[in-house]
Image 1 (cartoon, rainbow, N blue to C red):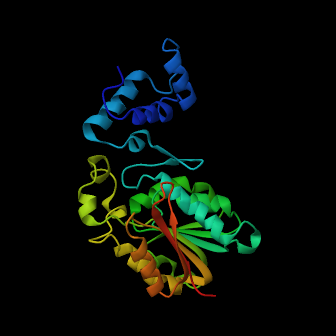
Image 2 (image 1 turned 60 degrees about the horizontal axis):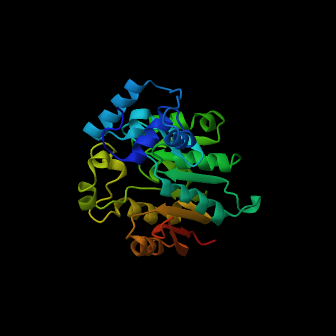
Length: 277
């Protein structure tokens, strides 16, 4: 018996990604409970993964090694943040701000704190002629990103760079047309109270943003005016209650055309600004 407790949606996810039984097939099985379906992994393997998730709070994405994100199937493993659905909107925001035609297309862009490489991969696919840079200070994250970004890396249109925020990009300062980042932004006290499936397994480095959650964002906004090209955009994801604080940091850093953008639930989750032309 596979269902041993836990969220039904999580079990559906496991059956889809590990078992190969997609959502449509699952709906059909609810109507025809006697139907037989082939499984990508046998039932005992699926049950073992489910038990490990329930008993040890291991994220299912780590156990399966895959995380669906946009139209991508990303490799994920311990040591790298599991991409969230709301972060997909950073890509939509980048496309909106740079315009649909080639006139606004960035020539150089960067993803700060790339993690799994999800944002970098989506940007590289969107602008195959542009030069991209994916930055992270975690060796584990860079290994994971390298696997997800292998095609773009081999074609020479994307580089992985190790280090903290702007530092690895010094040779590009003043020439970046677009920079996106989903930095650690959860205040320490809130991070300490997160569910074990997140707090005990996903990297603190990618989640804990310091006492007020703004440590990384301060560094990014302070260096943006020097690193961005004239007219270049900075797009940030932040905590649900940080919108005004992040916009103030952007303004203090010399950026203009500030605006807050909302996630799918109507929460101000993103901030964007640009270097004056």
